Image (cartoon, rainbow, N blue to C red; front, side, top):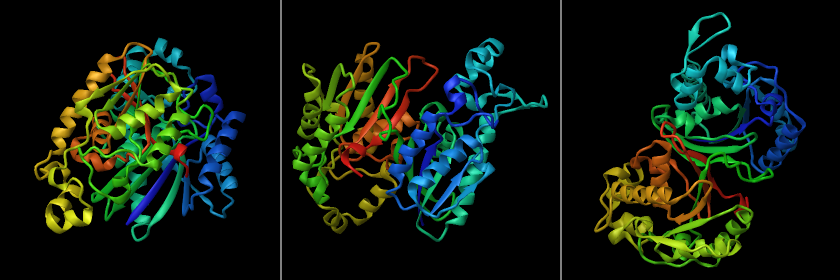
Length: 432
């Protein structure tokens, strides 16, 4: 069966605004700005048929849910469940981070670098590990959801909090190492996962988008680290439209692809960009050129190691033709891509190795406070994003990359912390 899960974080709360730790207490409420954010998210979601809504009962989340339902103008009743409560941070709740740094400097270092390993005290004085407990809570909720919708194709809206939503997403993608710090979720951000499953153990997950705030102003998350990379997949080609495997054949953008690149340019026109990199093939290069019309004077550095996967004998063929000649290999490509050697082409491991090499070269090229545009291809972007998410190249189908889609990565300035996926596969500028 198929589930589409739409995750929304609550609007800006009073504790968010004051810089206080919220945790599981219910003292924090939506600010006026948070209410307006919820209205904006609700308007976007109103175009999507929703089959069920689940929400945290804490008032900052429940009020966000009620505002979204009002905008949706549907008769759906929300299911309020304690399985969506925010992380329990015990005696930390209500304190500001500066206060915590003074009181618990060693524990704050653990929280910043590997929150899963943090142990703190409950109000009754007993020690516990809040993120490990929350991951277990997230798994219980998802297993219950899978059971409730095991024989149906449904779209489920889930409104909750930063930490629990991260844990839900991490559980879906098998909880990669240091995963909690790899993701960012802003107030009223929209994230979508598509899941095909027979059971909890037998599930295929695709992240369609993460942390989309295109309905807000500003429409991209605030840059909170020194270096940022904007990763874009090239616009559409005729072969994309026809469903042909392109690989390293140099197919140009079609008119729709040029329009997609122009839409990305409009979306990014107010973003400060200092450097640009592209695959050496013409479709990403032209996409980059169109985007950079709003940023004159930036030269595009072409990188051969960012070119698309070599499909070998599959290049230029429709999937139906490949299915006729290589049925078993095509089936394995869709389920176990790491085991496939393309006929006269590449393996996904080879693509991953050269793509990551190119990515690291770009990262090392950036100076503090610089933002770079990088335009490449579907398989290349997916292998880079698997690397950044802590996944393996075999898990490329977990990541969606639409033509003209925009992904933003903020690079870590600390060796102990991973780079952060600030948003993934934003396509709102393309309509719908």
